[in-house]
Image 1 (cartoon, rainbow, N blue to C red):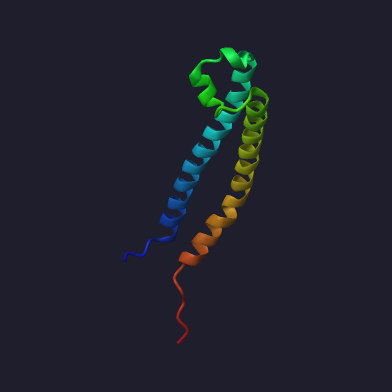
Image 2: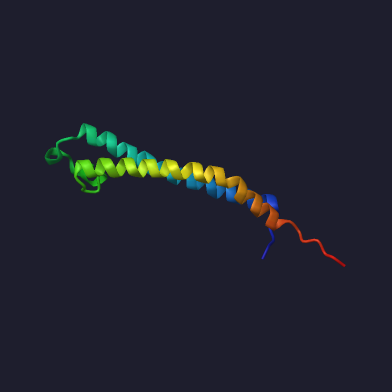
Length: 103
């Protein structure tokens, strides 16, 4: 078991945070893309099967609403993570400081 320095733990946290941003933005992109596709493929009966699959086989109005809700939720979650990251990184750094011995 190796003890990591404080800066290493903070850097590891920041790396995982960047992966989380990618995942959040991927789902936000998907949600907003569904809304655009609903606009261009309005006739549900003539939609290609791959479009139906992208809509999770939901009716257009439900897919549009759910896509917007997903995108909005992801872009609400992202700033919360951004604003909370300094607190978490500070906490990680503080926990990693060596304990002073009182003789």
